Amino acid sequence: MVQEVLRLQNLQKSFGSVRALKSASFTLNEGEVVALLGDNGAGKSTLIKAISGVFPVDRGDIYVRGQKVSIRSTRDAMDLGIETIHQDTSLAADLSIARNLFLGREPVNLKWLGVFAPLALAKLRNAASALLKRVGISKKLDADALVSTLSGGERQSIAISRAMQFAAKVIILDEPTNNLGVEETHGVLRFVKEVRDAGHSVLLITHNIHHVFQVADRIIVMRRGEIVAEQTVADTDLLTVESIITGADMSALLRETRTK
Amino acid sequence: MTIAAEEEMPGAKRRSSLIRSPQFSSLIILIVLLAVFAIADANFLSPLNISNMMAFLPELGIIALGMTLLLTAGEFDLSVGAVFGLAPVVVMLLVQNGEVSIGVALLAGLILCVAIGAINGLIVTKIGISSFLVTLSMLLVVRGAALYITQGFPLKSWDQPGFFVTLLAGSFNIGSFRFYTSLWWFVGLSLLAIYILRYAKLGNWISAIGSNRNAAVARGVPADAVKIWLFILTSVLAGLAGMISAFRISAASPVAGTGYELEVIAMVVVGGTALTGGRGTILGTIVGALMLRAIRNGIVLIGVPGLAYNIFVGVIILAMLILHALLQKNAARS
Ligand SMILES: Nc1ncnc2c1ncn2[C@@H]1O[C@H](COP(=O)(O)OP(=O)(O)OP(=O)(O)O)[C@@H](O)[C@H]1O
Ligand SMILES: [Mg+2]
Image 1 (cartoon, rainbow over the protein chains, first blue to last red):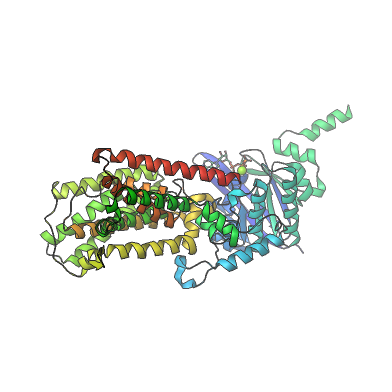
Image 2 (cartoon, each protein chain N blue to C red):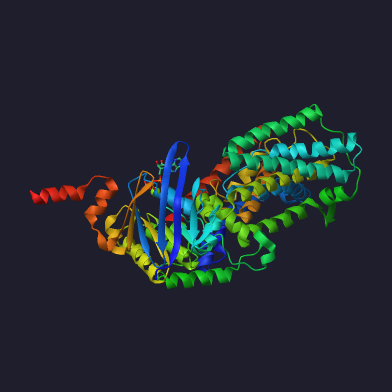
């Protein structure tokens, strides 16, 4: 029996007169990788920002494990087990890897001191090293290194490990392989599979359809603020998906050329 | 080379990063400067001169502590010099003309500083105007208010001794050195600021906000609230410094603190804090504050004509900034 983790119902969002999200509904199940596709400006980032609490939606409901929730801040989303790695880099480059991994959820001593509580530095460092080891990038990276000294791929790995570490139910990745080299891209895709195998659900936004066919179970296509198609990967092929994204019926075109 | 990383590094690595850190290079230059001044004029290290420098140091140094935290979070405050002038003027006016006690007047001054900082912070974060423009306007408003309510005249000297005067501007002798209690304020506040920026959860947030605000917000860090509180803190520290100064010289002038905003920002960036946010160092700021005080004092002693001395100050600040930039480049390459 598939367990539903996240369900969106009729989400809507406008920026002034721009209707970035006209109506979006879909369901994400446990241990599933869903790819969210669509051309530039289709509304993908807007959709996931709404889910992760960057801004409120104008209309619509969000359910987590069947419970209706209201997500008013990024903190709300994190507390519900939704971790997002945004398109625009999500790390603070002037901080160490360890401090980034625990940003916003720092382990502290003397908790009653609130924001003035001292960081548990040893704990922070050990947890960070353990985490880096777990995701298999320990040999290269030192938890105390500044993020500004890392490559784009390494930064992406750090962001993904951070999402994994808090045992998020849902991990959202907005174009995680952008600007990455071949090896780093494979690393990220490997992470996605690992994350799924560990029982998390993944919502993956990408422009690379080849990647989708490597890791996704299901595909959702958006166009101009609406979800226009939903298919399981097993039931479709690259050309069909491409044609849905652009709106041109390329497979029909192909059929025509074949019959000739 | 940030605060955020250095104390977490073990052994040799930690040492090499310390040597390349901006606060360390500032310290070396400070020592060189002190040595040059001491050799050029024996009076530089005389008890009287050192006592003099130590009397002035906390007044700008205290503001610089707040400014360091604010700059690390990616904002700055140009209204501090004006607040330095207005706070004591308001307090003394209340005491002289009203029927209020000095304690109540000080409380009113504190509330005024909190309000100025809160207005700065709210406009910067909620309306999204750059802190340069907001605090520049605030400088004019605050300085204008100080001039208007005093009609431009310094207030009559006020020198009734009492608890608050002793607390803020008392003095004591150690051997032939004469120190003011304000030095204790500076030391205590410095330790507190070091603790917050390096070791507390709040410091992690401050650095993260200045480094990448969106990333911090995405992790649930209340960036706007942190910034607003830092604006309030900076304003309150500027008012405190103004009170200390006014009590020490037993007078409040509406033009006191003119130009202090730039002097304070110079202290902070000379110490190695990045003007662009994300990288801040309190130790560096203390070194920077000492350095600017020593320069101002030393070049007068060694006989640079008074009118020429800003040239020297400017050149030394520029040299420091170039050094930091070169070190930064070097660090990025290695
Ligand atoms: N903060 C905003 N203010 C105004 N308009 C916005 C804002 N954010 C997005 N938009 C608009 O909403 C539409 C959808 O943008 P969105 O970022 O969701 O696209 P996307 O599918 O993520 O595209 P890409 O693949 O290029 O990242 C675009 O027309 C964009 O210009
Ligand atoms: Mg996008």
